Length: 453
Image (cartoon, rainbow, N blue to C red; front, side, top):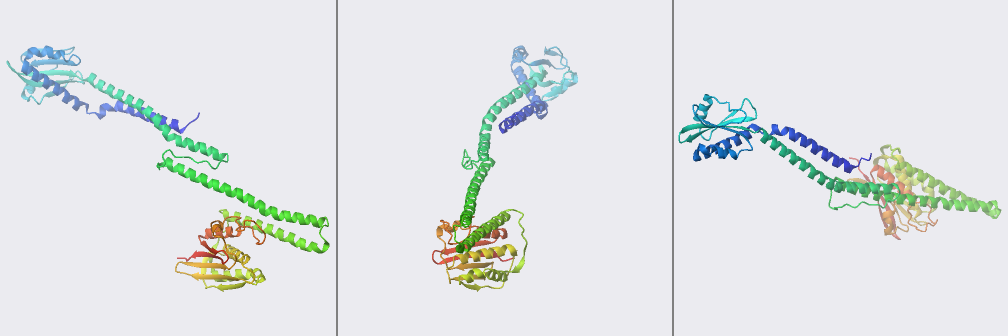
């Protein structure tokens, strides 16, 4: 059986209303002050009847009582000794001389109300009246059981009408409430089939209730999934390209050597190229594994305090074959300072930034590495005076496989993962990095490390 939110809302509403109607019907006699209500009403009836009798005389009573045919109404006019009028139904009015005397002692506006011992739903009302023959007690006996049942029945009918009208309204309003959920379900099914461009429109764009927030969150989620899917496709394309290029070179040169197309004297040169391509693939594999590890929640993270200036010097010494081979003037301006970080991960940051700067520094060029300490943070700048970076490339600089050289030529070695690894490691530490660059004048990468409080 399909259980939709629409049916649940409608069913819940109708169930609640039905239970409320039943409870209201049975609790109405207890919630209403039945005795007080009918005591007042019956007293008014008796007083009104007494006023008319005083004005017109007892002879008008039969005609007056014809107007009360719909009520169980008995009348007795007596002074305790003489009875000048009596109208009784199946039972007589149980009255004693003491009660008559008490009624005569009361004022006209203060009738005596008694409960009929033979019928608990009947009341006996006594009002003193002045007739031409003297003072008498007008005693009326009224049974209001039927009237109260009519009231209960009227309340019940009203509640049933409320149920019918409410059910119709909830059927209509539930459609308004459930339609956005249905749209979300339909959109989710499209996403499951691979369509990440789907979005859900809000009926009222200013609507910011829970459903509106859910739609906003869903649209944000699909937008992020679409970006991730595009990144995945780009990632596969880039990895394929980075792997295919060296494989093509290796395959071509190997076949040439095997077919004796390459002279013996040149085979060593070709083998050197094959070795370099294999190294490229190895570096790509290492970087991919490192990024996958950094993306996971289980990558080792062991922060501790250590000397940053010593780590920078060691990184410069490690890369000495690269910068000394290009006769680069390496200038250091380093202050002694300690930081709290994962030493191994941060070493990868400095190696990547330094080797990246070396790649783009000209022969016999200049590089600067500077540590500056401010009141709130430590700034480590790695500056080269190379070709610089175009302004439009800066926002994408830390993207995976992103290369400023769109033609992907081999003049500058690399696979576009180094800066991505740097950014990921700094994010793990909650450090930041900024880039200042101008084409033809060089680039400066600055790592900002907050001082420990």
